[in-house]
Image (spheres, rainbow, N blue to C red):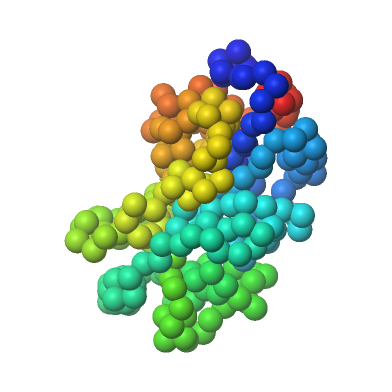
Length: 265
C-alpha cells in the first residue's frame, strides 16, 4: 500500500490522527497494539498530532495518560492545545449559542453544550446521552446559565431531523456544521473552524509530503484536501476520492494500519 504514498527518505515526518472511527471505536480506550504503534512513531523521531471533534475531557476518557500533553486540536479544530494548555481558540458567539438552545428547547431537540472543561445537557425524557452519563457526570454542569459564562466551542445536536433548520441558522449566524456520518447527529461550531487550521501551528515546518493524515469522517475533509498523503479508514464517499489509501473496517484493519505506518517510518 505504501507505494501509493510519496515518502521522502530520511526526513522527520508528522502523523495526524483522528480518533473516533480511526483509532477509537465504541468509546473504548485505545487498543494496546495501536498505543504501541503510536509510541513507536515517536521513538523513531517523528511528530504525533491528534485532531478530533472531542472536547479535552472526552479525549482523556479514551486515550492513555501519556498522550494528554501531546499537540492536538479539539472540537474539530475550534481549540488548539499543547502541553494541556489552550494556545488558540475560536468559540461560538454567546448570543448565537443562546439562539441554538432556544431552538432546541422549543422543538424538544436533545443537545449537549461543551466548553473546555464541562458540558451541559437538559433533562429530556427517554433520551440517552451515551457514555457521558455513565462515567463523566463529574464534568456535567447542571445550570445552563453557569456554562454560558464560559467560552462555548461546540453544540452537539442529537436529532438529525433538525439538520435543515440548523443549516439555515448556520448560514445566517456564522456557524459551521460538522456531520457525524456514522451517527444521526451533528456539531455546530464557529464558522471557518476546521482541523487543518487547528493543527496549523504544529505543521508549519513540514512540507506536504512529510505529513500523513489518518481520518474517517467529514470533519477530516480539510485535512484530506490539504495533504496528499491522506489515509481513509472506512468508506466515506466524500473522502474516498481524496484518499491515497483506504483501509476498510474489517478484521484485518489493525494489521493493515500497523504495516502501513511501519513502512512509512
